[in-house]
Amino acid sequence: MDIIKRNNVNVQGTEDPVIVYAHGFGCNQNMWDRITPAFTRSHRQVLFDYVGSGKSDASFFDVERYSQMQGYAQDILDVCDALDLHRDAIFVGHSVSCSAGILASILRPQLFQCMVLVGPSPCFLNHPPDYLGGFEREDLEGLLSLMEQNYIGWANYLAPVVSGQGNDGKVSTELSDSFCSTDPILASVFAKTTFFSDNRADLPFVNCPVLILQHDKDALVPLGVGDYMHQVMKKSRLEILDVAGHCGHMSHPELVIKAMQDYFYAVPSR
Picture 1 (tube, rainbow, N blue to C red):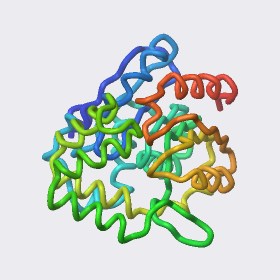
Picture 2 (picture 1 turned 90 degrees about the vertical axis):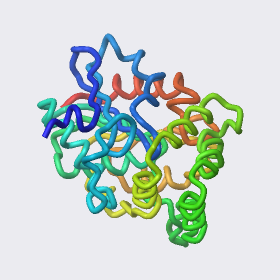
Picture 3 (picture 1 turned 60 degrees about the vertical axis):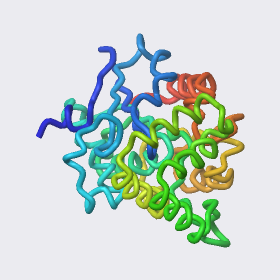
Picture 4 (picture 1 turned 45 degrees about the horizontal axis):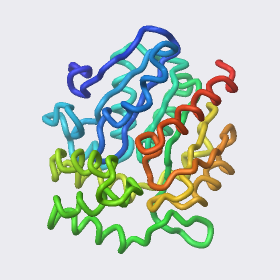
């Protein structure tokens, strides 16, 4: 199997260390375009699309595989294997990809020297009193019902919520375009996996250093989620970004870049 083609893998630069970027639900690798220029001279950068997203080969989409978070983690591992990356890469993930990256790091403890998690949530559902992920099950079921009944309407509704910029924001438009370009059937599978997975129990098993980048006004992820992850993950550092929305790497790339650069400088390589 040609993983490079299947996952539309693109590599920028030749300098080690390597950064592997993983996009969020309904998105694609282009969402990192505001971040990658800052690391062109210092890192080799790997970008890819999950099967069913972006310009991946959707013929390889398997409902059983991608109905579980492990399926997306396996995409990450497949891409790393295809590029002969076996240790000390840097993982940078957004939203649901943070959970996929966490699973990948547990399966391959030497693969990542550190991880940067942008807007992570190990579970979007509320489990009171110990954990408030932001949503009741009926809220998410209603969102998925809208998705199945009126996909374009769902995309136009969700994009400004995710971006935090309103209907006319540039990031809202980019997200809406990405949502609308994704096959609705495949997107529905990814959405259910994203919103109904619970990876809280996996967090203590991450052994590499982790930078958690939390947005301070995120409609999808309450601030308490970042605190929860920071307390459970042994080698984590939590930084709250002054960002409205769920996509700081798109709306405020300068803040994400600075946080990444500062963290890379502070975290020793293994």
